[in-house]
Figure 1: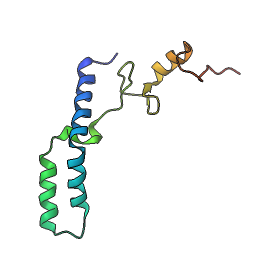
Figure 2: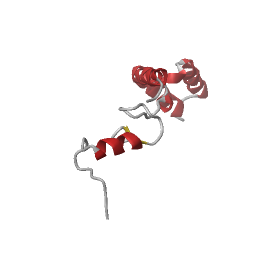
Figure 3: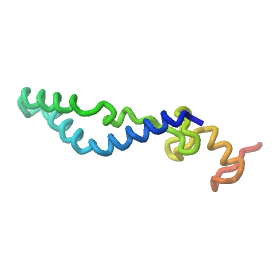
Figure 4: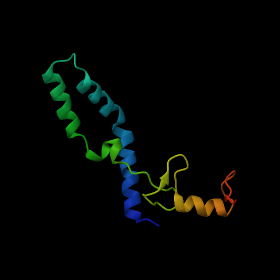
Length: 101
């Protein structure tokens, strides 16, 4: 089990990303528009820099929904490889069986 503080910090980051998503997208659109003046684009860059760092989507960490483990997480299932194996072995995930040949 991961540290509770790390899991909570990641949840706070997800909330910040959701809150600032539209504002960040609008500013990035202005920054990437080459038809605008350089001063306008620079001003948008300064506004983007003033937003919280944790509001960037890249700061969110993929974590296992069961254990909170940050490494070895399958994106589709949102489970770590260890939790996936335990759940599959106990029959909690439909359609997945232990292979044998």
